[in-house]
Image 1 (cartoon, rainbow over the protein chains, first blue to last red):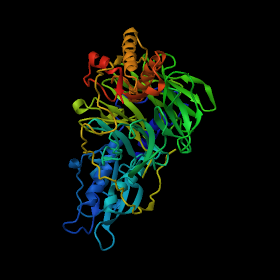
Image 2 (cartoon, rainbow over the protein chains, first blue to last red):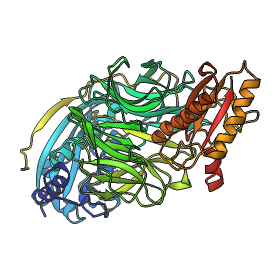
Image 3 (cartoon, helix red, strand yellow):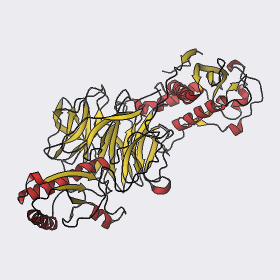
Image 4 (cartoon, chains in turn red, brown):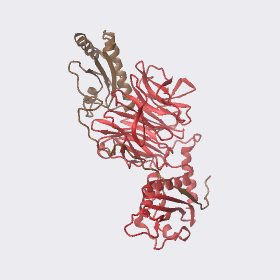
Length: 439
Length: 154
């Protein structure tokens, strides 16, 4: 099968997801094999000095790891490679039979060389090749310092993802999350794959409900740093936080609007938790719910016109949506058998809402914004705090199903229907919030 | 629709951008002393008994109301005392909703104490949701203990 045919297949599968009009009920949660077999051999490093680091291997390994993480590809084990030439082959000289014989349909290869006189500066040329058509599909050239090698791998992976699906990839994005340290909870940040974990707050209290600004320059959250819960934001680079609110009562679950100009949160007004809109200085500009019930966890639709939230106005908590143009009649959209549904997250493509329902533990469900096309994603343990990747292809959530039973962060691929634990804390990691696309 | 694209060798230069520097070099291994911090240690009430709730409820049943009547008598005898009403939940719900529910529980208690004549200037309230369980185990009896309003004397 040619890459072209496989592209049609992958593009078609992607349509399940991209389209809001197709009557699809299938989110492919069954673990379907859609992996496109691809080989990623080490790059050719023509004038490598002895004792020099191995960017030719690192880059190939990072790209292979990304492709495997994507759920779109089956990365062929390098142990089965048979390529016989020891020369540095350009894309036009590739011995394609060496790759078709091991089942590769795609091949990523390239060359790397040092630039300048000092070490650590490189130029890499990377190519995607179609093995059955025996030709190169595209190539990219990168100049970089060795410490940016991961960014090069992320950028090239995003080019490959874009070629196969027509949509940008999420490689390079980050995930903010809450980690338990002793009896406190603090804000942390990591790369999309769980690597590069670092602590952002040192509040010695409770930090909850992180969420990103649309340009990824701020993370907003609630902290008990002053012993009462207030909203703050902090740069993902760290540094000191800015306090947004200092009112009595709880301000919680803040989310920047898609245009970055306002904030939705729940706030206690006269002792009742309602959804409010705030300006960027934390001043309440509009009260969106007045039900007398608990209204909490707002999530914007990506066009900024609608809000999903959790309310117990009909007894137990359920998921509702409302238009910001008409807040008088919120519509319930969670219709599972559960009396307890919370934590809605509207997908960046606008066509799905993920939420949690108690159903033998807390489980993740996904439906369209009207509550139709309901799919249950998890079935065992406790799975909470669902949040979408910026490309809408993955859900991140916390789960106690992994190794050791501690709550940790899990990424679920919508396309492959498989999940992958990305943190391994012995205490607890929870409330993951995926950043917008960052390259 | 997708088509095979021509081989293009595009030039992308990655500008060197300073890698993020993080204020305290944090790698997630900070240790804090047990007593310090901005949240209290979970404890059961002594002078003022805790009040318990049903799952996903902020309603005060008759035994909760009896406890609150006793607590209000204590507050009348100790009329210079001020208290913080803490609302707590069990672990079974989800974190954000539980913070709102904990606040609702604290509010129910606040309103009841006010109806018994306790001055509002002596009362404040805060929710800790499911974050400060009295009993961290996962059992019906632990959950029942953890669904509580607790009274901290200022």
